[in-house]
Amino acid sequence: MLNIEVIAIIPARGGSKGIPRKNLRPVAGRPMIYYSIAACIASKAIDVVVVSTDDDEIAVMAERFGAEVLMRDTNLADDKVPLDPVIANVVSAYEKLNDRTFNYVVTVQPTSPLVTPDDIDLVINKLINDGSDTAQTVVDDRHLCWTMNDDIAKPTYEARVNRQMLPVNFRETGAVISCTRQQLKTGSRIGNKVSLVEVPQIRSFDIDTFADLYLCDALLTRKRVVFTVKGFAEVGLGHAFRTVMLANELVKYDIVFICENENDLAINYIRSHNYNVVTCENGQLLKEVLYHQPDLIINDILSTDKLYIDTLKSNNIKVVNFEDMGSGSLSADIVINALYPHQVASDNVLVGEKYFCVRDEFLYADVKTFNETVSKVLLTFGGVDEGNLSQRVYSIIKDYCKSNNIYITLVLGPGYPHFKQLEESIISAGSGTIELIKATKRISDIMNNSDLAITSGGRTVLELASLLTPTIVICQNHRETTHTFASDKNGVTNLGFCKEISDETILLSFINLVENKSLRLDARKKMQLLQLTQGKKRVISIINSLLNE
Image (cartoon, one colour):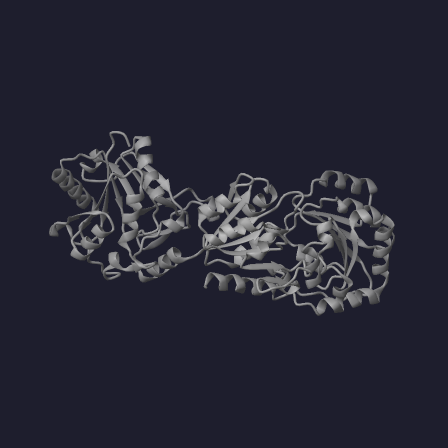
């Protein structure tokens, strides 16, 4: 910074009652004080890093980690002495010893090892740019709180509402406090004009107990898993559904989602589940992945090329690919392919429905008993329905269903582009035997309550099979025609590629399944023999094993 001098002070006493020798306790393999020193040294805004201590062992370690050290006067080393006079004393002493004057002073606590150089720079820049006396890190700490007044419990809130609706209430983390040199001369680092820098809860850690120490160690040593995901109109949302489901299971890892900009549907879906998504220009996926330095990557982007996977492997990244039929599948650590059983299995290629990841809503559903007659039919064709099979199949079967008192439930995905036209055609038909649902989160209930389903040839087929729902499949594209799970062997009637089958074929196949009770019963029996409930557990076990190698 031009004509601006910033000094960082890290106060580190040797005595600690809660955790003995706290500042030198190993955290993720290094003494705790290492992390604050490293963050200050890496800061772009700090010119000098000084550790203030009364302990020779801390002094030695601080110097080895790159900080300068000033030994603290004994009258300032007592745990009853507040921090402000300590910081003021250190700055004055350093200025006098080095004939140097500082404009700004930043205090970084050694007991906050998760603070980053960027956090420190944000605080210093906020102080300077706002022209404040003080700037410090805070976290949003809105809660329903109480206090005591004359031995009577009193709420501090006015209205009992959800936490997010409470007035903003920031709590000091204590991790980073910066102030002007002039403010420090008043005897306090906190002036009249204070700027606040909100940091994530996870980086507000202040180690005060052994439980804090354990949790912080776990956070610093956790491994990073990156998901790369496809999801746009032509591809649909199946990849996004699966990766979010897996991310929910991998809670002990640092999860990062990365999508190229074209994957708008996947980006929106993942964000709707409260995961951050890093986006990059199309063609820049590899560069973005390498920047985040994952321990393991899960590619749910269909086929990959060998150069992409080899580059990941050369950077010591474990690689798991889903449904990868490209040259990259030969180099990946594991390829999981539940939908393409004809892919040749090998040590690294795991094929078949036993690796299909059924979502929890299906795992815990009570499968309903078999109905002698069909009264409810489900139509659902994926998140996008690229061939608009919703409109076509509804138009084909609606008259038969109306005549036979069969109720149609038509579920549309979040990326379906023809909702208005379809809704208008249903209204104009004047049929009261249909329910139109868009982007439901209770699809398992709807499937389970249906006596029969018509769907496209993706993952939905296996979900329906897990609930023993007799199913007709109409493939949206040629890729779906290779999903050989959708076959009579597994209780599924597969009509093939939508552009190669007539409306009459669809209607006759539907009528045949509706009116043939033994055919539907046989489909259920075949589905009961499938291994669909343990797939997710198998996949998670594989991922954990790779990360623990």
